[in-house]
Amino acid sequence: MKNSTDLLLNSLLAGDGGRDAPVDEVFAWLRRRNREVGVRIAPTPFDRLAGWAFDPATGNLGHESGKFFSIEGIRVRKEDGTSRCWNQPIINQPEVGILGILAREIDGVLHFFLQAKIEPGNVNHVQLSPTLQATRSNYTQVHKGRKPLYLDYFQRARGDQILLDQLQSEQGARFLRKRNRNIILRVDDEIPAHDDFRWLTLGQIKRLMAGDNVVNMDTRTVLSGLRFNGFLGGLSLYDFNRFADDHRVGPFGRDLLLSELALSGYRSIDGILHWLSALKARYELVVDRIPLNQVDEWRVTDDEIVRPDRRFFRVLGVEVTIENREVRAWCQPLIEPMQEGICAFIIRRINGVLHFLVQAKIECGNFDVVEMAPTVQCLTGNYKDGYLYTPRFLDVVLNAPRERVIFDTKQSEEGGRFFREQNRNLLVEAGDEFPVEVPENFMWLTLGQIKEFLRFNNYLNIQARSLIAALEYR
Image (cartoon, rainbow, N blue to C red; front, side):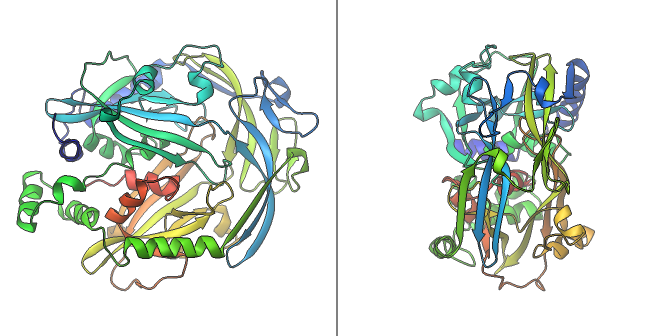
């Protein structure tokens, strides 16, 4: 069996010759599945939302089984240099779901088994999802439907098959302390394929991520944890350059790989841990669960839970029919954003090595007060009319010259809970004029340091992981 790190690196740098199809054919396959699979998503008043009801005492919106998730209220007090208090609805989904991808060596190259999956909230219906994407309620068949395909592989996983296994957070502003198991398993046997599944190299998946709303959030978060520095760390600079030449890696791809090798950067790992610990000790986040009917500044109508000023988000009900799902028809609430968001990393060279500017961000659903987030993470409505604030470094991102914008796409959030939510994802390279010294809640990390923290739970938020997953090394 070949070394897993070597296989990952070869898959990352593979050309467009995956077993099943080149990238252009994958795009065509996704468009075809969009045409072929019947989908109907209809907004529905809450009193016609089959299986769901408001609790008469608390006003919480939940499922009759007591499973899946509920819409409840929280009261938040945040101290991070400014004092803010507010109430809001939030998704309470205490179950740990599985986001699992099967990987297999095919013709000497590692391929990943992805699914063309339709979620009710997806902007464009079909997106590439993990092999298995299921909550505990789904895979224990609370819905009385079929068992998800390929579930047995993950339930019977052996330690020697695991390429990645982590518990990672979801959106901290919308979920209350929600986590999923992100897992990648390497298998050796031929796997029976179904119409909605394809084997793709990691390089192909990266190129697909350059398109708007092609690879879903769950796939992005799982792949973000993969590391490629094991093989490269043993090479001299001469051998590294020869390896890069042999794999036709361009200048920026080489810079990314060298940054991934750098576990010591502008600050050491110990220095970054000290920075995070100091902020967690100084900042305060108090979150109390309260009944939904006690959440002020929000109102419940026949068909939505919303603020009178229609900011941030609203909760609506939908009736769903999707022909190729374990259950063809169901009803559920979804969260719809009122604006698109921006998630952006600023990068620059420090001592010749690419560094990423992360921010320590407090979000009300975080497990541990602070998680590392992109340099800029905000809703457009927060700054366009001056309602709340203008995020630091937003002007650098929005005014960056075209040649400094490395990556700029629209990426969807999780379509099983969010209705047509997409954020603009950017990677912007700053020059030497950008300061190395930054405000206290920001820190420069190499890509290797970021990947080191990704080995553990609840250090980088899902927006940061989504951007890291999209990095293309060619």
